[in-house]
Amino acid sequence: MQRAKVMVGLSGGVDSAVAALLLKCQGWQVSALFMKNWEEDDAEGFCAAAEDLAMAKAVAEKLEIPLHSVNFASEYWDRVFDEFLREYAAGRTPNPDVLCNREIKFSAFLDHALDLGATYIATGHYARLRWQADQWQLYQAADPDKDQTYFLYQVGEAQLARTLFPLGDLSKPEVRGLAELSGLPNYQRKDSTGICFIGERRFNRFLRNYLPAQPGEIVDPEGRVLGEHQGLMFHTLGQRRGMGLGGQKDSEELPWFVVDKDLARNRLIVAQGHDHPLLLSPALNAGQIHWINGQPPEQLQCQARLRHRQPLQDAQVRFSQNGCRVDFAQPQRAATPGQSIVFYRNGQCLGGAIIESREPL
Image (cartoon, rainbow, N blue to C red; front, side, top):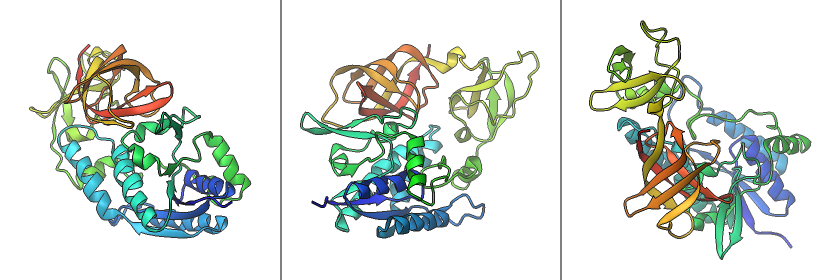
C-alpha cells in the first residue's frame, strides 16, 4: 500500500537530501520544494541561492522526484527580518533561526505544500516526534550534538502533526554515509553555519546596511575608558573577539569579555576572565512563552538550555501571566536578552521563552 504524499524542504544540503531519500525508500509519495527567501543582490557572493538551487535540482534528479520552487522573500522580510532588525536596534541579540522555523518552514512552507496536494511536510532537522497522551510531542534527536529542538520550540503541535523528521534517529556521520552510499551529489557538501536563509556573510558589514552604527565608549566595570566600539548591536554578552582591546596598562594579561551593555549611555562594558562574576546569573526572567502542548503549569522542575548545544541545566521555573522566572541549580554564563531559553524534561522539548533580563550573581 502506497503511503501519503509528503513534500520535503530541499535546501541543497545533505540533511534534507537524505530526508527525501529515506522517505522514498519507506514508500512515501515524495516531492520536494526549494525555498528562496532572500532577494538582495549580493556582490560579495555570500548568498548562495543559485548554487543551492542547482544542487537541489541535482538531488531531485538523482532521486527521481519532482522539485518545485517558491519565493518567500516577502514573507521572510515581513515576518522574520523586520523583527530581527528591531531586536538589534533595541540592544538585544535575537535568534532568527527560531523565528524562521515558526514563520517560514512550518507556516509558509507548510501552507504552500498543502495547497500543492501534500499531506505532510518533511525537513532535515535532527528532532523526533512521538504520539503520546493523545498529542504529538517533540523530543530530542538521538544525536545530542546535532539535536535541533532548541530552534523548533516555537512550532505548534498542529504544525508538528503535519511534519516528518526522518533524521531524528541518525547521527551526522550516518547521514553522510547514506548519502555517499546512495550516490547523492552533495554527500560531501559542508554544513551551512550562516544566518537562516541569508548566508555566511560578514555579519557586521551586513548589519550596517540596515541599521546606523553608533560608536561609543568601551569601559571596564569601574567606568575606566578602554577604547571605542562601533555599535552596541555588533556585540553580545560573553563575546571575546572583535573589540580591538589588546594589552591594557595596569591590567592583567587576561582576555576581555563583554559583560554588559549600558544602553542609556551607549557604553559597552567589558571585564577580564571567561567566568567573570558579572557574566554569571543564578536566575533570569523571560517572556513570550510558547508551550508546544497545552499550557505551562504554574511551576516546573525541569532542565533548560540557553543556547544551541549547551548541556542541559537543572532549573526551577515559575510561570505567570506576563512570563516566567527561571532559577538555576548552577549560575549560568552569558544569559543574553533576546535569545531563547528552552525547557526539557525526560528528553521532551516542552517549549520555551525569550530572555528579557538576568539577575546578577
